[in-house]
Length: 220
Ligand code: PEP
Image (cartoon, rainbow, N blue to C red; front, top):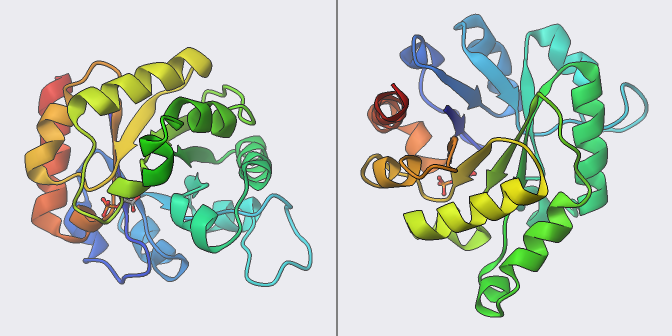
């Protein structure tokens, strides 16, 4: 069971508040050092596929490793939506990060329109088709319509999507999309939900702590 806190473009709480929790934190680049120094398993929110070169604004796997960062998110829907991330660039980032020794949480998920059109399975199949199993690869099922909206997939919807994803690619699957202390229990209790990727609720120390404790109780 893995709980990952995605702090997005926020300062986030004092990283020391999370010391002792079995969780990883994915802060903005400017807070990576703080989180590493606090002894947290720290992931970046993105990583470039080249180890070095003229790629202004990007950060490479060796640069992250040098800082003590142990993993990275890849393909978050906000990267796909606003920054031109494609299945191909997600594949390149994932492969390079894994080859360099970083762990990866690769995010996939359908939009509201795609779900309503009955295209969820096709979208997940397409997004996963560019990835290969790896011991350090974890997937996150993040329906786009549930991220930051307060709308969460039901436990049944999450279970169905996760089971489908695992039938295509052998990897643990986290659920992400408005996970809150109240909704975490029923979602994490699903047999194919292997953890959560938490945005908004990870910015509140008490909420995030409760979600981590809920996860620990379910799998103990
Ligand atoms: C996310 O940032 O990946 C996310 C799922 O955010 P939220 O929990 O706020 O929906």
